[in-house]
Image (tube, rainbow, N blue to C red):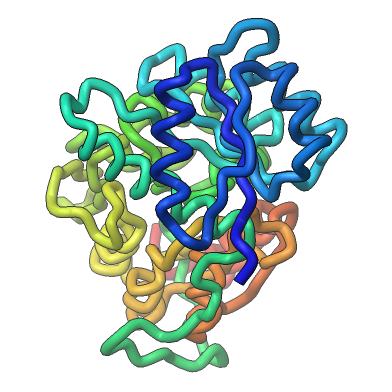
Length: 359
């Protein structure tokens, strides 16, 4: 197997060495060059023709955002993973980078107090993303152990849709930036979202979407009553759930164990949606690495709800939606640009069909 060729770009020689040594331990990866600033990086891309670039944000001469802009002009399909510090400034710059075309991001290990912990963080944060973005990830979509897929064709009772639940990961910020602003001001149901991101990132993402969207977008809060015209983003490192409380539905936030190595996890949200809303649910699975959301989609389908997913061609990584499709749980598959119109159509149609069933 030919290894994935990586260019590491960072102004810190310590980080360059740490990344190079750690990534090169994996036989599927090869660090072919390093660079201390963006200008050198652009020259080395032309020389070594890497399969992927890891790119620091704060650098002298030419910073990461400037470098990314030039990379996208010259190499529009070259995967780029931003490698930034977990600070408000770093998180904001990372979201800027994703909007400019970065493929994904990872946070630098800081204040770990241990080289071993730093190395493990790099392995956890980066290796799977590098392989997925380079087409070397686990792309054989098989049903999960102990999982029995359902069939696609179903006769639905067409109950009203009362909630839309969205799950996404890699490529999700840009996908959400397209989908959420297309929802109309009079959208009649709440929207709940899990985007795999650490704390701080999710708050900044919610703030940015709130500026772009017609609807109110915020980071989820424990006990918040769900109302029409709202979009709630699960806070980083916390699971978000919904529950029925009398005649109302409220958000729940908890720090329970990770699921699918994720917190927040899409499965946790989807499972609670199935329990609270049953057949009145519409789930949407967008671009993302891994299989989070598949088990939750199964429970939503079993409760009578519907599941739609993003197609492979428009996904940055077709892991999460591909896993749902492989398990025969997707009612329909749409390109990213068709997701929001389809959500609006289904909500309107289903509520029209059942207009006399509930006030």
